Length: 296
Image 1 (cartoon, rainbow, N blue to C red):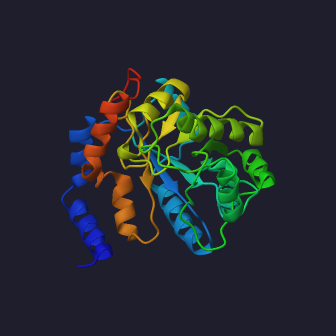
Image 2 (image 1 turned 60 degrees about the vertical axis):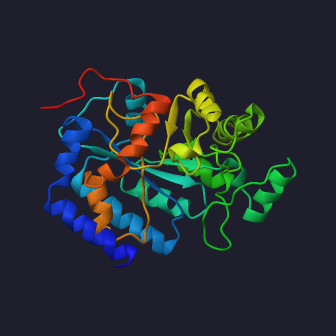
Image 3 (image 1 turned 90 degrees about the vertical axis):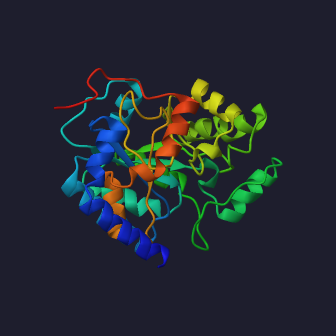
């Protein structure tokens, strides 16, 4: 059985066995919370998949705004009867502009985490920029000929009501960086350049690659000290007092069966990545409690 078929079969079993309800009780004490999805490149074919997922989410969950994620980080989260869903996009590739326009048209606000040195640059120019600083940058996964958003598009995305966050400076793996100079290069430079591009304070940072192993102890301490809102990229429901301070996100993949994506967003696959969430709690602690973590 190939991987796609295995994911489809897994989705069917998790649904008929009531795995989402079991996960909610066993992992989150029955609480509702914030589910975060991250998308990457959104060329025409990928955008069709994004629209399908978003339309399904809008019919199934209340859509959250970036400001509601702020409340979660700050301990002000007010739980509701169902989970809420926040949309995010990583890398800042030019194709995200059309996704931002479409979302604005349907009244949904998202956070776009951009590699700011990709803005106004081709991939070749991006690599050359970092080479001039003695850095070997990582090229985000993308189609041939991809380039970053323009600074004009970035300002338009902000004007549409979306938020711009930082996503590393050279998209390097923070798990491999231990010295302060390199960590500052990836984190502080990214936050400061996003601020310069948007003329707004940047307090949101998405870790490149997003797994616990993609954070060294030194990078973890730096982020905890310098950045109040950090987003990881492994699946789970964000619940005050229970899940990691660095928010969990489901990484959407267009090659996955839609049935698998749906069950993941309903919580039926959270147990598969429970070890990553536990490890992240050990590394960074839990989200602050709101005093009303459980509904009902």
